Image (tube, rainbow, N blue to C red; front, side, top):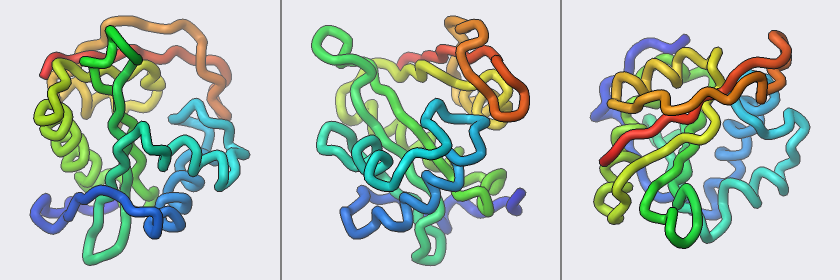
Length: 169
């Protein structure tokens, strides 16, 4: 959609509570389409806050010219003995999708995860028709380690597969 943005034009920082209105706008615009995330299209602002802004996740935002254009969360994939593997979720405002912001955030997340002591990163539910995400993760060294058959109810395509994707850091 958007034109390529130079990576140095994007600032990434930890989100603050005061950023949530802008995060909510992005979250809502991405989720309501029902084609990439397992959150219900009718997820409320309060529910989104309890997913994206809780203390157990590190929430980041990407800014372009001081405007929040994307967000991601970083957290342990599992508790206890599985906590050495990171998990993350990324959302880019639809107006800026395809501009390279997702790549900048992904690289930031991988670096941050490694610096935080994680040994790997795993995505548990990458919708198979989300070719933007699948190709980005493959380009960044992730492998599809599992296919979950017909686990996602796509708003337009019906039941489709999702992938488990993994890479060591």
